[in-house]
Image (cartoon, rainbow, N blue to C red):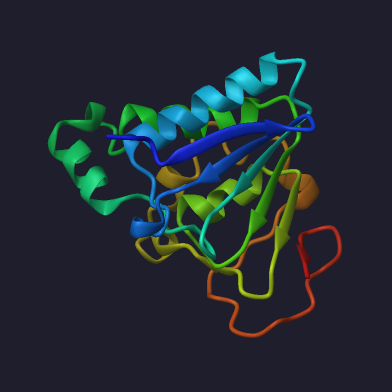
Length: 178
């Protein structure tokens, strides 16, 4: 199975592209591993100044691939509810040293929205839609990671539990919409 993540570097920007459009860019264990490794490699590289997360085909990410998520849970998942690759990615996010930017167009579900809390800048098109099903399921503590929200949240925290249905003004300093 491929990771569904494409990594490239252009002009000191490491682009982490979610590339599983047939599954709305949903993440698998391999996706989490690829992203975790890319962030570590980018932080260690003098050729990378910033990490950029982007989706493909007008979808940022549908979050976890449910089939992969259930298979991991059935296989044991380490007894923690989340597989090791998922936990590794969540634990890596607040430790990233270089700036992280997300360019969101279309759907951003679950971890796709959680990722925003760790980014230094989030650019959202008017078509961006954020959903957090784990809040409705009361799973937010487990899904938001170990060690809390990370170091960036006090500076740029924003959260939409409900989908943004119409373009609206967003509070300066929290996020930007085109």
